[in-house]
Image (cartoon, rainbow, N blue to C red; front, side):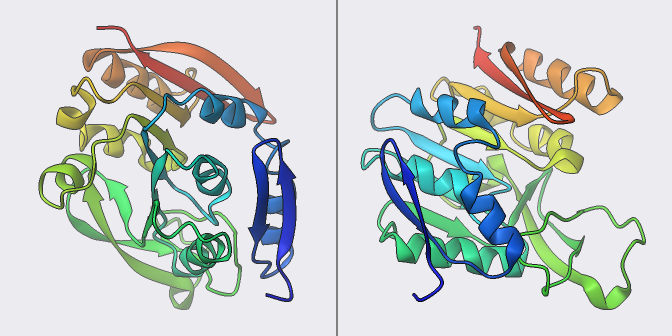
Length: 231
């Protein structure tokens, strides 16, 4: 691909499809934007399953997939971002160990509306309509729960889960209670604020399924919390 951007990492080279300025920015910031996330991925045990919920164009999906013993399931409901995610996996020949799914993860089976323009590749979006965009800049998306994905659709239970969907985190946890109680699931890495009502609820929810905060990583105005199984 003519516009593929090469990013060199300590674990090998990655290629990114560039569609607009933001996708290039995300690729170039792979190793620097959220250093703690990269360091966390580096700790994965051999032969693990990693779920990347809210994968966007797949920066962390691709980095994890550089290890041939890691299977990745990447979830990205926004059509424009999903296209780039799938293209990036194709560019890097990761098709055999990465499953890209154009669905959202939430509290249960539903169809939700995203506020996102298909002409803004690699941008973030909102699952909860705030009226900031006209109706023409919306997209319907299928949403399934973690428990449904494992129990009804046969996806492998994850050992590690990254959740980067702030407005949906509580619902994702609600919909994954049985999966979260399985001993195979070792750690979660979540963008959340312990000082917000929603963030405190997430911490309490995970405590009830046996997880405690093991690390806090601040980057800019946001914080990533790493949870490990305590019981």
